Structures are given as structure tokens and as C-alpha cells.
Image 1: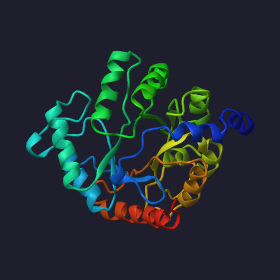
Image 2 (image 1 turned 120 degrees about the vertical axis):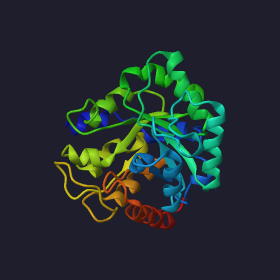
Image 3 (image 1 turned 90 degrees about the vertical axis):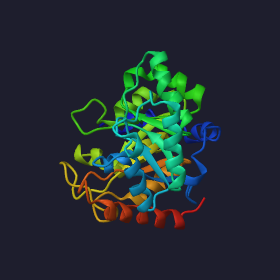
Image 4 (image 1 turned 45 degrees about the horizontal axis):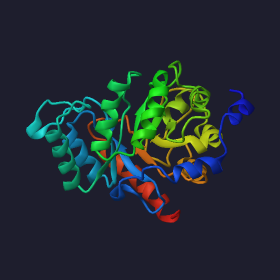
Length: 286
């Protein structure tokens, strides 16, 4: 990666901060004293229904959840799956379950979004009904539509990266795409996938920090190949330093813990990750 070239793609931090000040805030219940939300990406609990996953995220101590498409609702709603076509009464049931568990939905993804405005609008309407901060996607080909709707609905569009050789593994690809675009467009920084791709997540963040809107936060044993997720602070990813970097630029988004290990028994490890982030938030108050 050409460092100078990538740095040149990043707008001035002061301009981004001015725009961010006007953006939709996180749900109040989810915000920490440090200004960001500690959330669980519910893909971590994909072996369970949505309603069960929400209960587990709450039990782990998180203030927020990042929803993902097509998880079965469960409970009285059976095999009905979460998607933008969910009827309003089911959306209300979901909101009621979140409220009952003292937790908020903050993001939805990773989801494909059409470049067709009418189709894409369904996702933004859905997000607005849920009171979300943003949506996570890899639909970079729909960026014109996404920018228009991100401004109209005052929602963040967070471009997510999977490991190489997928199309967005290299952060320069996203940086080029969002150059000069509205501040509601930016990164959903998946740190574990960068590590798998052989990148140093902290070094990447230092280059793109002003445009980071959300995280899929992970810790890993090694970089350069896939390794299992592990509790924050026990691996090679310096998540404290990463949070320091983005907070210099006014980061106030969702830090979603994505734990793709021990699928059926990972609640204690996710709770450790929540504790790690709570410790950071308690000592880095705005």
C-alpha cells in the first residue's frame, strides 16, 4: 500500500468534525462516557434466534447491538427473519424486546444495498424505524445512491472489509471511493479481517481515522493468516491505541464486538470484551 497516496485521500479532520457535529447521534441508552457505543454484532450469536441473541448481548453488559440480516426472530415470531420487509408490528415487537433488555439497536449489517433508489430506500426506512445510527455494507457500487440517502435520512453508511482477496480488503479501495463524499460515508473497520490480510490494524487506523464511523472489533493471536478471536487485550491488536486514534477525530459511533469463536459458548468471552471497553470508556471520558 502506498502510504503517501492513502494519506492524501483523507479529508481534513476539522472539516469532518464540523460535519459530524450535525449528524444523528447514537441512541442515548447505548452511549458510554467516552462518546461511543459498546455493542455486540449479533453474528457472534448466530446459533441463536434474534430475541435470544439480544438477551445474551444484554447479559454480557453491552449497551447496544448490531443486527444482521436474516436472523430468525424466534419466540412468538418463529422462523420469521429480520430484513427491511419486516412488518411494522414485528418491528415494534423487536423494539419492545430491546427496551425490555435495556439495550439499543445501533447498526444493521453487513447487508447488500441496491443502487436502485427505491430498493435502497427500504433499508433506510427500516433503519430509521429502528432508530439506528447507521448501516454496514460492502455495496460500494451503489455509492451514489447511498450518499444521497445517507444525507436524506441522516444515517451513517459504514463500508465493511472482509479479508483478501475480497474486493474491499485493501483500505485504499474504500478511501478512494469516499474521497470528497459526505461525512456520513466512511469505514466499518473490521480489525480482525485486516489482521488476516497481513495488515497492522493500528497502522491502518492511523491513516484513515477521520473516516472511521464504526467498528467490528476483534483481537487475534497473529497477523498474516486467520487465527481465532480471543478476548480483547490478550492478542496482537492494540484496541486501546486504536480507540485513542479515532477519538482524536471525534469518533462517536458503535464499537461492535464480533466474536467468531466458540459459537455456542462465547458469552463469557464477549463479556470480557465488554469489560475491556468499559474500562477504556471509564478512563477516557469526553
